[in-house]
Length: 406
Image (tube, rainbow, N blue to C red; front, side, top):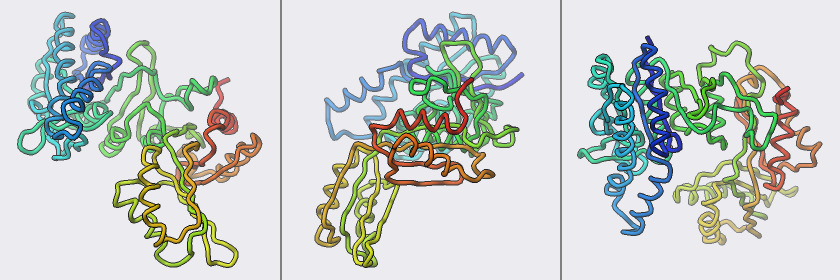
């Protein structure tokens, strides 16, 4: 007998028929002798509707009351899915975050989980009752409802699996696993049987939409075996596991891209101590996260050009902040650019193989794609290129690293 946490996203519970499909999947696991806890999101589109209502009432609203409103979507789903399970002959009851309880900090709208007391839930599961838990929410200080931010239901599920010491956390979504690239772009993309926590974390942070970054971090920290699989097809998914579980490691496991990028170039900045702090300090104070940084010093050593990237939604604010610093920084010209994309290759096999960057740069050069900036880590190489070449670059790299399906 295994103990499982099964999480179903918004599309998986988007209608009554889909909820009945969820109930059938859960019933199959129960009849196989497994103890099951279910975590659900709000029905697709419901959270957006509730957020819009909050904005209509007051664009600058109280985040505590905002959390009270938007958490209602999951409350509805828990009750309906519990009913669907009961109708299918499975004992079930709904649990809200405060009932478990899932304790969080007081950062309303983007709270982090502090602890989960699963004792009461484990007693129910031992008695054959399936708990249906509201994802995305918990209870903060003062017994106020707190939400975890977008994608928080994945985090709820993994955290609950850790608290219940579950054998596995299954994340059901509208894709059937993790692929070597976006199959909408790369027709020869392959579904991976297994991927390491580190690889999945890099892919999630670099643009892959399969799992939310915080949920992967939690799975890695607590060593929760996590499976990504489809709600709509009975096929094996992709297991996210410890590196030791993967016998033969690919040099590169996946190619991904992030379109949410923008670039700023400051031309002719004075090359003297304190300039970098003068540029990046005010950006940091404004909560703008800078990613790639490239600096080119002039031949006489007096001037430098500095290029750096950030999220596209932060570009206008960043430009405004930098323009206020023009006299202090003494730059000649500021050039913003939204037409960029970050393309990355990821794989734990990079640790023991040289030449990954060379293969990547050569493949892009053969397609006449210019690289504007580069960053690396132990298991990834990322490049910034013109957004016009996104699909061409992803396909070229997928082929160059031998990832194309036969």
